[in-house]
Image 1 (cartoon, one colour):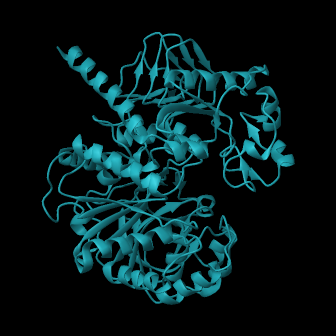
Image 2: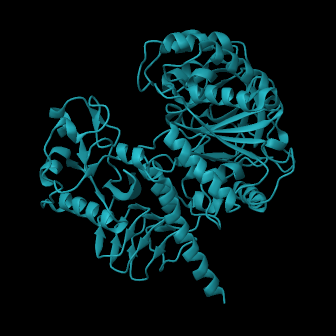
Image 3: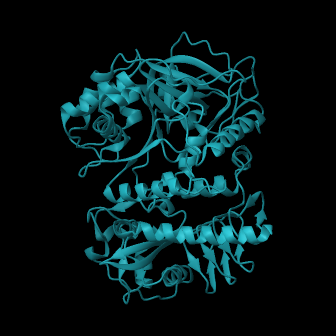
Amino acid sequence: MAAARVFPDESLRESTQRKLRRFSALRGQPVAPGKFWDIVAITAADEKQELAYKQQLTEKLKRKELPLGVQYHVFVDPAGAKIGNGGSTLCALQSLEKLYGDKWGSFTILLIHSGGYSQRLPSASALGKIFTALPLGNPIYQMLELKLAMYIDFPLHMKPGILVTCADDIELYSTGEFECVNFDKPGFTALAHPSSLAVGTTHGVFVLEPSSDLKYRDLEYTSCHRFLHKPSIEKMHQYNAVYKPASFGPEYFAGGDRAYIKLNSEYVYTDSLFYMDHQSAKKLLAFYEEIGKLNCEIDAYGDFLQALGPGATVDYTRNTSNVTKEESELVEMRQRIFHLLKGTPLNVIVLNNSKFYHIGTTEEYLFHFTSDNNLKSELGFQPGAFSIFPNITECSGKTSCIIQSIVDSGCFVAAGSVVEYSRLGPDVSIGENCIVSGSHIMTKANLPAYSFVCSVSLKIDGHLKYSTMAFGVQDNLKKNVKILSDIKLLQFFGVCFLSCLDIWNLKITQDLFSGNKEQLSLWNARIFPVCCSLSDSVTTSLKMLSAVKTKSTFNLNNYKLMSIEEMLMYKDIEDMITYREQIFLEITVNKKQSDL
């Protein structure tokens, strides 16, 4: 019954593979009541995203990639102000009540928050981060299938209620042979993972009850005195959230993104997903129906969990340092939630042998898919997953990663790069640490290292068009300035954006940007050409990228230009799904012929 072992952790790998095998056996099969989730719900930010998610769910069910007999729903946020994942949770509760009346009180429900626009991983922007492809499975797993697989044991040991999770993280855990994770206590119950103090500053941290007598077993149940949201290291010490090295037990905790923690260093317990029983959910629903409409961002973790536990105080409600946009009613709304939930218990399930991985940025995506040997071992990631491809390139412990793509034997894909849902011809060379998504490149092309290329199908005035976003994987698309004279502070592929506009012969006017004219960024810059074919779209965007790298001129004035923000408004989901399906069918035929 030792806790986490010296890495790599064989028990964690075996536990993960068992869950994957169990889920694989359920794909396309009807599930008996009580053996799986009654409802799987995904949140969407707007109606366009809602439609994209519904279309992809329909396709998945048609192809028998998901368990059958489960109610799959997409719940969209109301139009207007951003309401955060806490607001999305409240909306989802209201949608459940409308659909099922009192019946939903007897259901086990998985609620996956996937309402963002993935500005830090734009290859997931058009079709959603919950549908991010993984180098695993046949047919390919996306994040949705992986979530369902990793949580496959939960519904069997869960009282009616809602499990709340995010679309871009992976939780792996192992328990003792005869132990299981139970969500059966009143109030809220959260998973806790051992993490370094540095990691604790960017996550939620549990201050466990002083009476908690942890034995460093794989699985332990305790309760939380108070919850700290993204606290400073000083604050962790102040509230006794920090644990000292034990005089016995394992040499290491597992960690994932949270780093291996040697027990001669201090550590904290950080959050991932949480469960709320039906009574707590009903309380939140009644509150939401009373207020009628939200006009501010509510965080399901920061604003719900910080109100819980006997040590919770109202002080956090006035701390807006972690808020992207501070609305006038935010503090008042937080205080109302605090008083609503105060006194509700926060139970904690400590998983000492667990790992938490986040795949929400281009750098995390590239690292975990090409370089992270631990995650590869635990999940069985393949360097070439359901693809036609030449030999995989390997260098310094990194490999290339090809997912549901057709890559010519003459094509070169450097180690550290990921290609998904694409066709690449014989004269294509992909540099290291690149991301290529949804693209078609048959002409001679050389992608410089650290390039990001992602194609999007568009429907403009009833006509099918294409645009390809191209920039550097390290570019910050979220960084914005308020006035045109400050756009020199933005960088495109490491080059001053002002210089890039000069290279492309584009004038600096307000019309260069879509949407909010007080938030000027690479995200809403109209710099990407719209073309009549997918291949022309990729070729043209690569030319503008090459011009920046070589400091040569490439005139964009002759093209209709679009921002990434606008691509998402005009995206043609059906065509993008059809393109992926064509690649899928060609690979399937090829594999059948190879087996003859």
